[in-house]
Amino acid sequence: MTDRLAQRHVLITGAGGGIGLAIAEACLAEGARCTLADRSAAPSDGVARLQRKHPADVAYVGVDVSDTATVGGMLFAAQAAHGEIHTLVNNAAVFEMAPLLESDEASFDRLFAVNVKGLFFTMQRVLQHMVDTRVTGGSVINMASQAGRRGEALVSHYCATKAAVISYTQSAALAMAPHGIRVNAISPGVVDTPMWNHVDALFARYQGLQPGEKKRQVGLEVPLGRMGTPADIAGAAVFLASDEARYITAQTLNVDGGNVMS
Ligand SMILES: NC(=O)c1ccc[n+]([C@@H]2O[C@H](COP(=O)([O-])OP(=O)(O)OC[C@H]3O[C@@H](n4cnc5c(N)ncnc54)[C@H](O)[C@@H]3O)[C@@H](O)[C@H]2O)c1
Image (cartoon, rainbow, N blue to C red; front, side, top):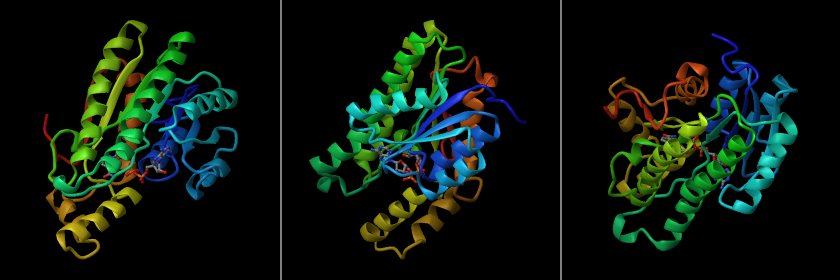
């Protein structure tokens, strides 16, 4: 299928690499215009590649989503580039882990600042914009995680941030339903991205594993027999952003090869 997102403007945070970049590529292939946002002032190599391929359709903005003052600037830049925003993919997040008794306040603050505060206030600003512009077919897709479905001894703060994402998705969906704006989340399982290279290195440290060993283990444990790829997640994002999902809201969709059943 093509052009499922024609005439749509999709804003994606954390789009410099990994899942966010794959979602950008899939949205562009479906005819969307995209504003891509990430921490660095300059676009990553992956974003620059998309800009070369779709020169009229890709804008880039540097933002730290945990700094609510800069989130307004991101929205301003997005509207200046492509007008009214139809879809927000709230994807930026960070990962840290430590044994529960060593999980400290500084790590809590870093994780909640990006994964919860950044996600919530970005969503709030974009929803206000959608209400003000009476957008047609508006939707938000928050990036949750299987980590938000079940706690983990070594990953307590991150798991808690992702449980919060699922909860905010439900509340926002109910608040926005009268405006015809849908709010959903995607819950990936284990996806081979730069974030998982970091996760693998941390498991190696805390569990005495060889580099790459945790990745192999988690891939084998997935019912479909492998880790996901960023492109595996992108299809679900396109679907949720499209009119095919017009009667779906308040849901967290597991895209995880069968890891979590619901
Ligand atoms: N990779 C997985 O296995 C997996 C599993 C479940 C959920 N997720 C979620 O999917 C999303 C994408 O993960 P990924 O694996 O592609 O990670 P990634 O680290 O490869 O990409 C995340 C992007 O977010 C950006 N980012 C981080 N902090 C930011 C900030 N303050 N402001 C703006 N941008 C910021 C990073 O620069 C990076 O480009 C995240 O929400 C993550 O929690 C990933």
